[in-house]
Length: 545
Image (cartoon, rainbow, N blue to C red):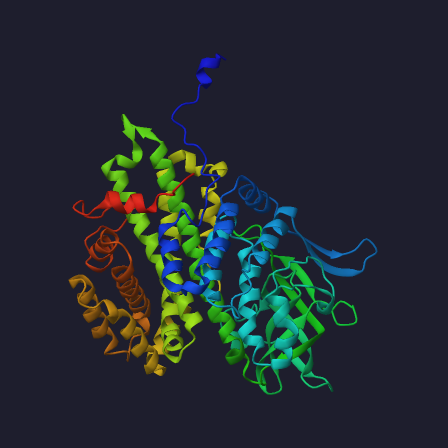
């Protein structure tokens, strides 16, 4: 074949060797907005290092290798002894080790910890989203453990450590530990009150033996787990260590690993307990109350994780369009493509801005902010995670056939995109949780309305959307069938309020026109042409070099 037919022209260079943090205007501005000046310089330095690592060729290779070599379950050793270990590709351990050393399990005890961690999580998981699961579970276990001061004193220093130690050993012999979670069972799924796993009390205070199964156990290679089981006093929360203090393996039979659509680098398993030793966390019969703070924290990570996927997809789409020539000029300058990119950029920036606002509420930790989170977290989890698949799918199409091949990385993003909408309660669960908070916790609604009201009067479309929302809120008697509609409206009003206060005028104007004013079609790329779309796209473009 003639060599001339293989001359390569008009192909886009890979987006590599850049700072994922510094190249994201929406994220850097959010960090500056929400962190106190006293910790801002330190946070910028940390996030800059993480951003440069995430955008490096090395980290991108780690992500591809970890995703391409899923974990393998070893139930027995060569002699027939039960070991129940999960083997990972070395790249997985490199990703996880870098994340732990960067403090992505350490938020609860340092100034601005939640904003710093959320920003870091958003940056680093763009290299590979799968290892975000053990990071999230470990981070989120802390508030549940704090219901028992003795357990918190034993485990919290290990969970918030910046040292990653792989391998199963007694926790006291490790400098850092990871946690997983097991709530759902085959017969109940989200309905955890139907769990059948039994917890039989032992003579030791707070000690039990568990018998039962978990249909989904997150991060089964971890050092410890928070699980729900039925004790004599009702559904309760328990800490299950993988290795007992004397070095013996606890009974923790991993029956199989899930073969998942995406999230391929991460292990999710089905496990059996048969006389498994556990410590009770919180009071008997208060299992859901004890573990609910862990669930809320992991739901926020679902929002942050979806924002990360959207940001990476949009960055790739804008980068491709900036370097690809069509009909005599850059694709990014073509009016129709510019409309699509601007529409995607709006969704990404709104997700990032909302995610960091929620993280800042965790840092503030006031009664007002806790009440705000009670509604804002499930509403954000409902809406942002659902928008993720649509954004990633459209961004993939911006690359055309080049985006449909594995080497582009876009198929991996697309397979990952539905995950956060399903984990920690799917869409209906989140919408009903919003409804439950509205009915039972009037302070939560007051806090939410005060938050969105901070931008009232700034844009007539937001004001109209708030009025419509208040009309719906006035009658919640038969609202279950409309709970999704209400959760969507509340999330959009909140995003619009935040963007009007903090985003550039062209971004806020385009968001309010399309998301609140209804001036758009049913798919991306149908924004009004009179908007300043070029500025919106340029803001989303990665600053390279």
